[in-house]
Image (cartoon, rainbow, N blue to C red; front, side, top):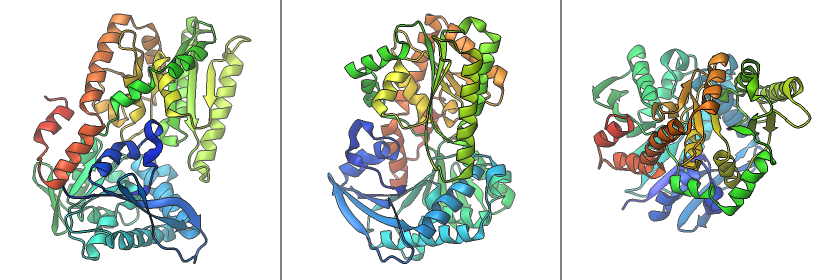
Length: 469
């Protein structure tokens, strides 16, 4: 079997076990099986001009190759172009995009530097799988260096429609670099559709077969591969003795109905809108007074950027205002936690909450929705309230699907979820957990790698994921 090489912005700790999240869970087993290599940034920022090389280490059977960023690269490649421009544009927020020619040039240069370091490690027959918006042009840089291996790219965030994407500087260059890959993976069918729409509108490419596009002198396969979770591992986290103790702490002996939201503190997650919807629930349905509690966990992220400090201030003001207006001596309606929480504690909180509130304004997938479903007691499950703009909504149609911009609609869905009879809750959960299991992390990884190797055209799996089989 060919060796798998992963390239991503950050390299995670594969040894962190059940506490690991995101990409480490997604591709860790595949790397271990083939004695693979993981390449990326090690999280360090060094002074400009510092002479540094490539750091090589081992985690179990996996080789790890990392490099730091210089301060200039961190400011421009990471904070600048990746997170001040690409992130807002890909999340449909042109109003928050910061256009900076220097940041774009450093983004290009960093991808070229990373490609040069990685090219020296690639052997004939290796499969190269590059991840996310930070490294979009990396395959193009590798091709310039003579790398002919099969290369795939997976975008973890949404792919925007052409009117959004065309606002990015040198958007045509960026899309051209995507054709350096053999396989493009998107989270949803809508993302694939947006890619096809861009090619058609800009007249730079065309579909020549189902899921196959021609442009810029190359052909690329583009498919939806909705990412999943390790269902059994997360379910076990929710059912431990420690989890039982955490659940016991939730109500503190009071008959409380917990509504839980778990997100990074990011403007794409719709957290202020979520708080306003909870306040509307209190206004319209006073019978939930002294029983309903919104617990919002919002882990800090990218705190150097102004947009993130602004949203933190807004949430603190909203939570204080709601608690001041509706709270009482023995009841705090909003419990707002601005710090990371261990995954086993999150699993317990999911299981102990009657409603999972997942209402991003735009999200590539949102695995919290799937984790909430996996954590539930099948005999007495909670209800998932899910934004129509989360990628997970394509799969999880038996959730209560809402428009997160519509405060009254979300408030009504919360009331429906709290009041839902057990028979309906069990039926909805049965369908949801079946879909989460069908599209778990192994299915996602296997489907992508088979397609990248050219051993699976994906027709059967695509039908299942689309809900047509």
